[in-house]
Image (cartoon, rainbow, N blue to C red; front, side, top):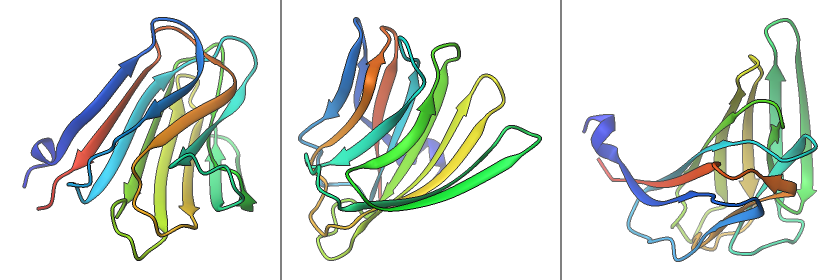
Length: 162
């Protein structure tokens, strides 16, 4: 199946005013995987975007990240987190974030994410995250301590079975 036919938009949110949380609820369980694609900017300070599933704010998440700017790289690893710290969003550049969420409706395995984030200043972050829970994902939120600016766009896609 061509890739263009595999992605099916589930929901899109384009902010008309600043907010600190974007939530996708009632996610259908009819796809194999999910992909979230966002274009965002913050109003003040550079902050991390925290991804959570099913309103779970417990210490049930882990992540490994590597990032660079073309001349240097850095990496880190975290366990027992209250969400997947998925990007460092800036106030000066539009930031593009993509996350694949595998087997989101499977109720026998932990949920794994693979993400990539880029800003217009040649900074790239790659990340793997895990939600240590076997529940099917029915909702997802992206939250910042600051606020996303109006015009930020968030689209959730379902991946159809081949």
